[in-house]
Structure formats: structure tokens, C-alpha cells
Amino acid sequence: MVCQTLVGTTVTCRPEVSSDEANSVDEKASSPTQSNAHLPASFYCPLTMSIMKNPVQDREGNSYEAAAIKRWLEEGNLTSPITRNSLLRKHLVPNRALRCSIEYFRNRNPSVDTDDRTILTIINCFLSSHFNSKLDEKGIVLIPMATLYPKLQDEDTMVVEVPRGETFKFYTYLAIKNKRLSMLLEVDANISEEDNILHKLLKNGSHKSLKLTKVNEEKMLFEMEGKVSSIISQKVFKNTLVTFIKVVHRLQRKLKKNC
Image (cartoon, rainbow, N blue to C red; front, side, top):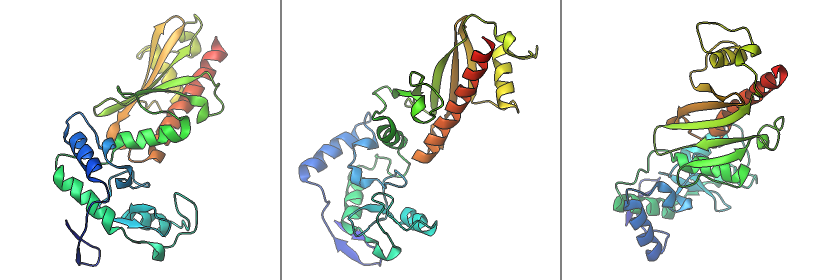
């Protein structure tokens, strides 16, 4: 296979995977029910979590998307994002073999989306590193909120739901212990009791992505929805989770104070 290199010359190279692995990946990638998660992990940049187009390699053997690692270094980072050992721009060289491998699979599987960020990969990498878990086959996982926000109790859990669609959802249940919601604050008759709580907690009343629903006299359901396309990195996903969890904590304090 012929690939274009960074310096404008061409080289003929073979994919750096075995023929058996190549056939296996081809079969999985061509199936409409399979995702990019079945492609070799080496195809993904550890910074962007996207399939690389122009991979470069450091002297420790780690590969990155050229633009991503360049940006990392320009931001003042002087160490590898993987090993934390010293890393300078002069240490980076084109990874031609990996680039050819990626091009090989792209050419054999044109239906595989190699340009969009792999959202499920981003989320599962984060869940694996922080909770030792991942989304199940339905795109659902239960996680302890205290891991990211120690002010909550170990038994406080939330559900992360990322179905095959355009939106994701976080939700958890809150105990209200048989008290009327209207007792929690001065109620505006023009909106629901649940929305009154959110208005007061968020102060500016802007909570289009949040929903609080009374399930029964003892329990409330608190939800947050967002667009899957907004999850462009593990950092963004973590910040979104923490925002939701902080509002959960404020809701818990409000409910406990008035019950």
C-alpha cells in the first residue's frame, strides 16, 4: 500500500496488524451494528480520543495526532500526557506505519466513520479510569457520585444513559419524606413546584437541560439531558457530570433542611 508522508514522498508499507486481525476488524467494521470501538486501540489519539489522520510518535513509542500533541506542547506542557516523562517537539517523528494501517482500514471500510469523535470511546475511557466500569450494551451504567464529589455519601448513585441517538441523560432519585414540595420555598403560582425549586437553586432560572419530577410522596426524580455531540473530550464529560452532581448535592441539602 502507498501512503503520503509528511515530507511529500511516498512509501509502500504494510498494515501493522496481522491478516487475521485485519479480517476480523473488516468483518466487525462492515456490520451496521458495530461501532468504531472494534478498531484497534492504537488507531485512537489519547488526547482527542479520535481516530488519527496524521499520527506522530514520541521516543517512548506513544503515538498522537500531530495537531493535538503540538497544541499540548504549545500550551506549556513539557511532559508526555501518558507517561509524564519529558517530551519536546523535537522528540516527535511521523509514525508512517500506523498512518498506513489506518489508511488501509479506511480504504477497505469506507462506511466506517473515521472523522467524527468516538463518543462512546471517550465516555468508556473515562468510566474505566474513574469507576472501573463502562456502559452496558444498552448504553447505561450506574456510578457512585461521591467518587467525583466527596461531599456526597457513598450510597448516593446516579445513572448515566447514552443510547444510540443524539442525546445523553443523567438521573438520580431524591428522598422527600412525605413533605409537600411547596413547603420548600415560596411558590410562584405560574410554574410547577418542581420548577420553583430549580429556579431558586440555580438563581437565574435557566435550567432547560434539567428536570425535577415528583414520583410519589417519598421520592423525586432529577434528570439532566444534553447533546451527545457536545462530549468532545473526557474533560468535558467529567465537567458535565460534576455540574449535575453539584446540583444534586444542593437539592439534597434543601430537601433535608425542610423535611
